[in-house]
Amino acid sequence: MMIRYLLGKRTIASLCVFMVFNAIGAQDLSGGFPGIDNSNSFSANLNLNKETTYNNPVIPGFYSDPSVCRVNDDYYLISSTFEYFPGVPVFHSKDLVNWEQIGHCLDRKEQFPNGLLIFAPTIRYDNGIFYMLSTNLMGQGNFYVTATNPSGPWSNTIYFKAKGIDPDLFFDDDGKSYVITSTFELFQIDLKTGTLLSEGRKIWNGTGGKYLEGPHIYKKDGLYYLMAAEGGTEQGHSETIARSQSIWGPYIDNPSNPILTHDNRTGQGYPIQGVGHADMVQAHDNSWWMVFHGYRTVTNGFHHILGRETCLAPVVWQDNSWPVVNGNGTVSIAMTHSTLPITPIENKWVGLELYSGARSG
Image (cartoon, rainbow, N blue to C red; front, side, top):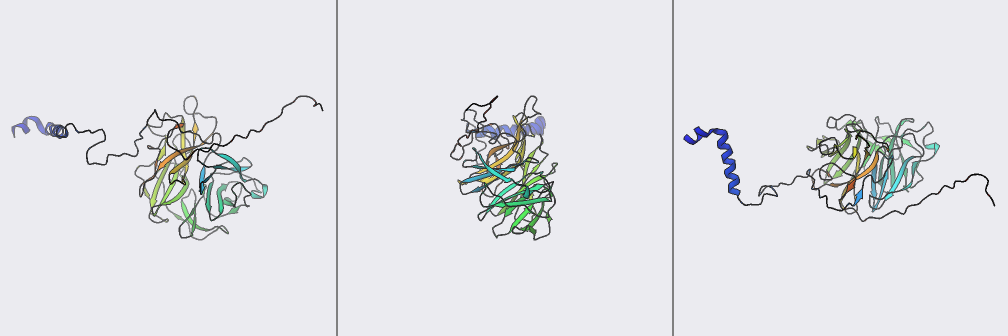
């Protein structure tokens, strides 16, 4: 009683803590407390001595809003082109690092008779058919085109009556197909005609960031995951995710959102900023990867001159858990994560002969 009176409650508590640590004694606590899972998937284990395996961006230049799909061990990626023609380039890769452009989805007037202003596209594959969905603000809104060969030719546009931008396409195990846009209203769709087979139902409101857009739906371990871009495609850009037992919801937010952003203390000084508008793919070795865009900053970190470029990051997605992007949700230019077997692409230079005056011969 006398000790308690003289020391006080706060000092007694400190003494107890000291005694507990003293009892642990010489045990090695470098890995955390004994008997407790001390793993923290959002604490990146950075080793500056590791060899660089690839560099971001994997597709440099003005290639924003990337979307990716896999067919066996082949990977196909597309990006936004806005008012530029031909529209929506198609890239092919064997390793997700080296990409070669093989065509365009929009390459003739018949596909867009009233003009072209293309927003974020999605590419998906099912039963021998490739689908590219996008929004044409000079046309009738959301549409898709199809192809059996990703290098083309692609079909004429098929429009469907869903508001918003950035349409996504999801094929469920029961054969049903669904589309969702930036309104986050979900529809079942008949892909033969573009007819919506259900009323739209809003299934998620995001986490509160501005400019909620770029939805993508995935199914893993029997759960539906809905990923989105938030914060605007600028320094506050981010990627968030939620999941549900039913495709129609309700969707529960990941408590560790956002899963990708540089709008925090860790990422604020990185040379790539504005990371987001992502898509994910499971590789043929069962590893998971994310493609997304970001811009390389110049001068004070706020300006960039090459636009938003396509980048790549590894994803750890364990059973019944949330996806973790590159350990802590940030990325760098020099990446050290192991990759798929690298398959370099031969450079194909196109020469331009310059001359002055008349030719001889």
